[in-house]
Image 1 (spheres, rainbow, N blue to C red):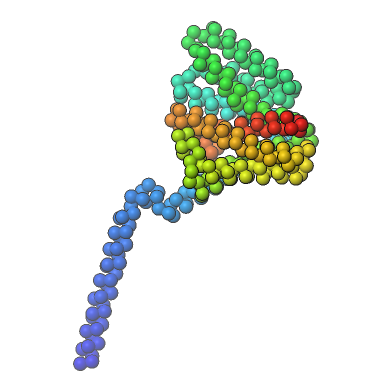
Image 2: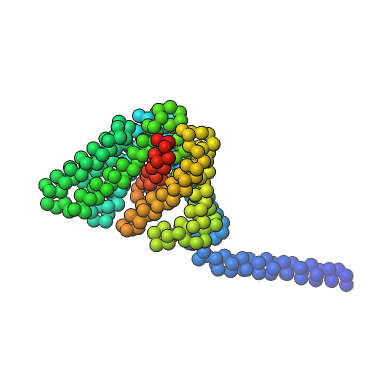
Amino acid sequence: MSTRGEDTSTTSGAEHQPRSLDTASENLERRREAREGERVVGGLRGQKARSWTERFLTRAMSGLIYAALILACLLLGRVATMLLVSAMAWLCCSEFYRLERLAGRMPNEVIGLSAALLYPLGALVRSDALTAITLLLMLVCGVWYVLTPRASVSDASITIFGALYAGLMFSAVVTIRASDPGFEGALLTLGTMGSVWVNDASAYLVGSRLGRHKLAPRISPNKSWEGLLGGLLGSCGIWLIVAALGVRGVGVPIALVAGVLCGIAGVIGDLFESRLKRSVGVKDAGNLIPGHGGLLDRSDSMLFACMTAYFVLHFGGIL
């Protein structure tokens, strides 16, 4: 009897175990099917975390290479800085004209790109050279407009604006670097540009984690007021380091003013370019830098922030 009972118990357990495994497998399969829609669009928690990490690492590596190239030129001196900024201005202007051509406008790229290339050189040579380049740009564009029946006033205006936007505004970097040919000039310029990088990085990190209130949803849906605040704190932090090092006599009041104004100007520059891209329905102005798009996508904040830094430093008696 005991043997028969043991056999029955063993048989019952053997039958129960496969049935339990089948049920668990079916439940697992149902859960997988229920979440298939989220998996397809990358909505699972693990997929989101992996995607965010990949984007951050790509942006960080590209940003480090970009920053290292700029740092090397700043340390090499004013001429090296001017050559690099001239190349950057040319590329940014080219990407701007690409966006405008997508919008149906026909700027004269030869005139505009030539002026964008000359602005950083003019900033290094003498201050009134920038005025001369601007007047010459307008004169040449006026002649082109008169002699070209197909050209519109909009085309001529876009040609001039592109050179001013990418060339003249970028020349502020050269002006700041040229204020002191030695190490302090390089450090001041690095602090100016570094505040923009830290502002962007802090805004991205804080906004992506804590952003709840949209800053400009119609222009850039990912930007938030929380990100703006995080960026301003990062920008002020870099400027306070510049003040603590006593670079060119920058004090705490000027550092705080520069940190706040440059941070705000950087956001305006970013939104300005975002609106340009949105108006023609593209995500990036180019594809030169992995994780960032084109050079204009990487430099949009820099253009406005460095020009703002120039004004703060100039009227603050530093330049």
